Structure formats: structure tokens, C-alpha cells
Image 1 (cartoon, rainbow, N blue to C red):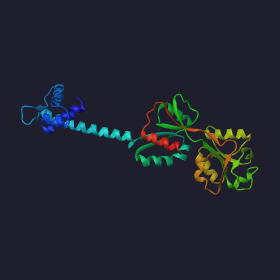
Image 2 (cartoon, one colour):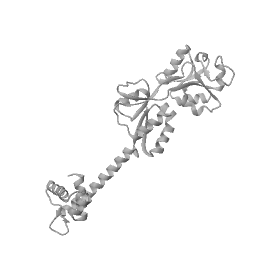
Image 3 (cartoon, one colour):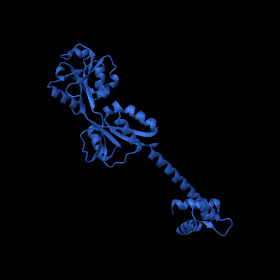
Length: 300
């Protein structure tokens, strides 16, 4: 028994004529009759009483047609639903991303995705770098955004724009930077001139702290660590409050650039300290909405 036989039976019950039913499906009457007979033989019961004029359903046939209509309706509904998922009208998009990067870039990206796929369920799994790498191996995401390098034999890699790190300094602390030219073009700094500057930093196990320590090592300075915090958001707020300076991704402070109390300075040690990329397992299925999200991120 198959969907075609169910369709044939329902239509035959409606028109009560083999010839008319066959015409509706644009096949010969013998071919149509053969399908109905095959179905009855499989079920071992007659669905139609051929002794009446016009053709009529048996009692078993009435029950069969009623159930067949429900099955065909459910099948049609299922196919339409799958088509909606295929087109991206409905579905689920799971993105692995670090909390900081998520805060920097995802609000605008999510808004754009929702404009195109309003019924899409978007899940941002905000994890640490180690958790993101494990999640990729386990297939937990449609894709993840992590920092290179990764094993490109196992993963497909789509590079994104490098992260630019800047020194965010409360204006009232600028005088603590050595060789601070008193001019409006003060846009770049050497960390070796920042020995007196108090810093707010993250915990030693966190990636951004490791970047901070690496940059200080390049500059050959022992930084004046004024306070240690857990989250980048807290570090940013410390800078806004004038407590201390911090090294932070420029993307994270774009909206703060207009804050008259903060100065953002490029670092001579390194303008780009991380190379983020969209990463997914090779051969992994990519939905239309995942493709759309990837294109948005590539062009950001």
C-alpha cells in the first residue's frame, strides 16, 4: 500500500467510475484498475462493490476511505512543513560563539536574520573556546565562530575579519602614559609607555587575559594590574567609570567611541591579535538560513 493507491481509492470513491478516475490521473483505465485490484488483494478485502451502478463502496471501503483521507491530509501537511524548513521559513539555527563576541556582533546579525526568516528559532550557545571546540567535534552547532587555528582536515573554515584590539583609557588617566603628545592626533600607543597606567584585567585562565599578558611581554613591561574581574562587560564598565584602562576588542567598544570620557588607542605591539573564523564540520548539511547567516557574518 502506498500514497498513490490511497489517492486512487479516494478519487474513485468520489467519482464512482473507473474511467473518470483514470482520466483525473491521466492514466489508462486498465492501469488504474490494476492498482485498485492490487490494493484489495494486499488487504484481502473488497473496497468497492462492482455489482452496483454506479460503483459503490463496501462497508470496509467506507472505513478505508475515511482513514485514507486523514492519512493523505497528514502527508500533505508533513510535506508542506518540510518544504517550509527547506526554504528556511521555519527551522532552528544553532550558533556556537563566545559571550564577548556574541555581545559584539550578534544583536545586529540576529535582527537581520529575523527580518528574512521571522519564524526561525535562533539559539546562541555562548561557550568558552574549549567548549566551542568540543561542540564542533560533537556536531552541536550549525556552525561556530572561533579563533584560528583549527584542524582544517576535519573542519571547513571561513575566515572573518581579524579582531582589532585597542587600549581603552579613561581620559582622566591619559596623563599617566609616557610620551603622551598633547594633541588631537594621539591615536596610537606603545605599551612600554603605559607602565604607570592602572589596568583592569580578566582572570588568568581567560583568553583575553592571555592576550593581555602576551602584549605586555612583547612590550617588556610589568603591568600595573589595579583590579581583576571575570567578565569583559565589567572591565568595560570599569573603564567608563574612570577606574582603570583595559585592552579590549575594538568591536566591543564601537558604541562607546562617542563617550567623551574614554579614549581608544591603537596598539603598536599588534593591531590584530586574533583571527576569528566560521567553522563547521566538513560535509555537514548547511541550511538556507545558516548560509544566510554566514554571508551576513562574512560581510560584517
